[in-house]
Length: 226
Image 1 (cartoon, rainbow, N blue to C red):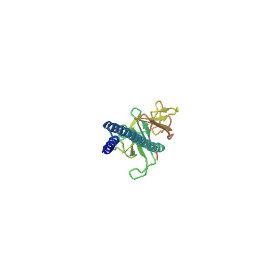
Image 2 (cartoon, helix red, strand yellow):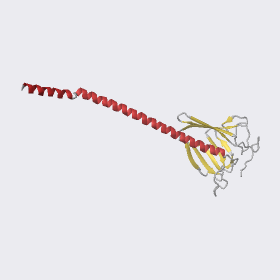
Image 3 (cartoon, rainbow, N blue to C red):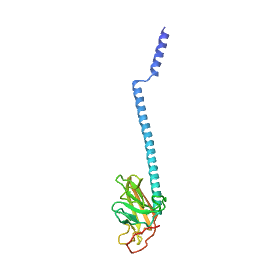
Image 4 (cartoon, rainbow, N blue to C red):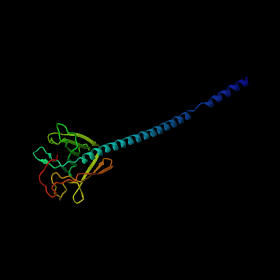
């Protein structure tokens, strides 16, 4: 009988030893919670890194597309005046340094019934939403009568600077450059454009223009190209 009692007592003692105490259970839960938090933080870091990488790729693709469009426009500069809608003619190429903007005539477009010459008027400017936008009009239209065809090229723009190479081989934000007299159809031979984004990053291109000035030193008359 005594042996039986000792055997049961031994079994009961082993069963008590095989279980978890309350303190052990609490510690286990705390460790599990800490590990869960650390795992969540690690996953969050990875996801945030992926989002940043995706955003950078999108920004790079946006800028690449914008430079392609800008380069094509500059490559097709034309010495063609543009009706301002008030009975006058705008220069073939002109800038507004006080409030970024540049307008010029561009050829090489599709020759359709509404625009048989394929020449259009292009304007680049920054809108109120800090976006670099491009507007275009057929050369037969007026910018005052129509909003033109609008395309937003770059978002989150802090500043855009455009400079033209003067006769003195100095880049000037003005066209025609200050202290130089140019024919209304004159075009710059070199153009430098710099885009600064809201995050402080900067990208720049030096683009060949079209060195055209039919009457150097004179500033009268306008005309059209074929």
